Image 1: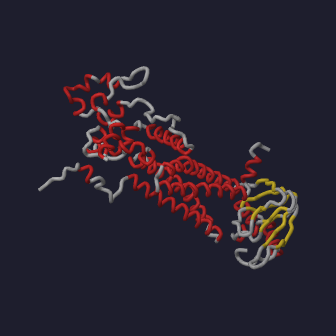
Image 2: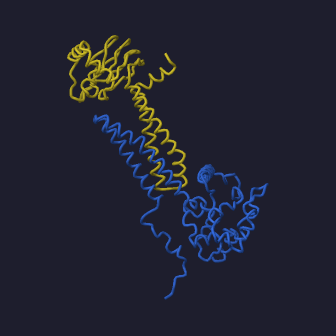
Image 3: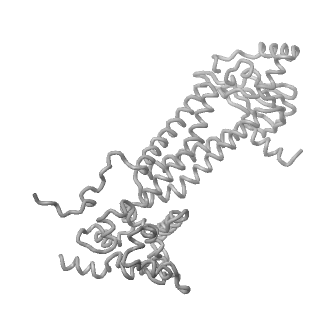
Amino acid sequence: MEQSSAPVGLTLEKPFEGRGGAVEWAGSLTTALGVLILIIIIFTAFFERRHLRPSIVSSLRFTSLCVLPLLILFLGSFSTLEGSKRTEFCHSCHSAMDLYVDDMQDKESTTLAAMHYKKRLIQTDECYSCHADYGVWGTADAKGRGLIHLYYWVTNSATARGEQQIKLYSSYQNSLCLYCHSGSQSFLESGKQVHRKFADALLGKKANTGAPIMACGTCHGPAHPKLADKKSQQSNAQ
Amino acid sequence: MSTLDPIVERLQKLQTYRRILLAAQILIVLAALLALLAVQNLTPITLSLFLTVALPSIVLGVLLYLVAILTSFLRRHGVSYVHFAPGETIFRQGDEGDFVYSIIDGQVEVIRGEPDREAKVINRLGPGEYFGEMALIRHAPRTATVRTLTAVNAVVLSQADFLVLYTYLPDLHRSIEKIMQQRPVPPSTEG
């Protein structure tokens, strides 16, 4: 029997699609709460005109103007902010990254992004996982910059900084790689403990630029193909 | 007179309560619609609208609702002195009964609307007279609209306080019964 050569991650992309994750549940609850608020506000106005008992009107008002909106505040924020970390969302604006996304999903590619994708090391939010800082302010920082991007896009500016050339805000930090890799046995013991030997260089930063003294990509890169190479590959294929 | 008195006085008015509540409702409805839009169709535009418009609207709407509750609380407790401008509607026919008003100076007109007829002025009241007691005693909505003809200063008594006085002061009880008999009977239980 001939075995399929397609990686498992590409053929079974959403094995639990039917159940939905926390984001989907939060989204559904937000929808239900939004509709419920509208219905209760309309009914409260109707019942008030019909002189329903004031205590019932007050309870309905408290529910529709205080309890449910606060629930929407939390559930809606969670649903939309988490949903906006997905690759499709990033890709909806960053269409210039088409080639990177194509490469990531290319089963023949050997770049870091493609390898992570094929092995499902990062199961969702592939762009966000490597390009937004972790921690409490990571999401806030990313979304704040996103809003600024949108402002520049709406006002027809070239880029967020008004520059023609798209580039990273700052040097890519090893901490983003180490968030997952540091501490793992394979990481610590690989290559005769080479990571331990270079720990200072991996964790240290250059004083003038803030870039890592030794970037992970120096040995393991590149994360993505060079755009020029990929474009030429595509034109040759055509 | 404390510096807060004018603010408290303004907050005690039914119209202020209604306006605040309406503003809260508008903000919450707007936020709910934007939340629905963002959740159902998550794009950078809908996400931005959710973050920059819906979330502040929810916070402001809930705060306004809490202010409305505060105004309601202020309106329902204690005796207070209230000033109304000329032409101001003090309450409307069909409103929930909440206060008795006793006029110190100024004049008001009492207007009643009936089904299939134009609203007409049924009475004018001046200093020393009071109005708004019928709804409180009968636990029914207001039977008429009261609007000021001139600037009016009035003393306002909440429902709970009024009913205590009405129950335990026989002279007041008799006086109000007499006035209620003289006043026109409302066209229906609502009116």
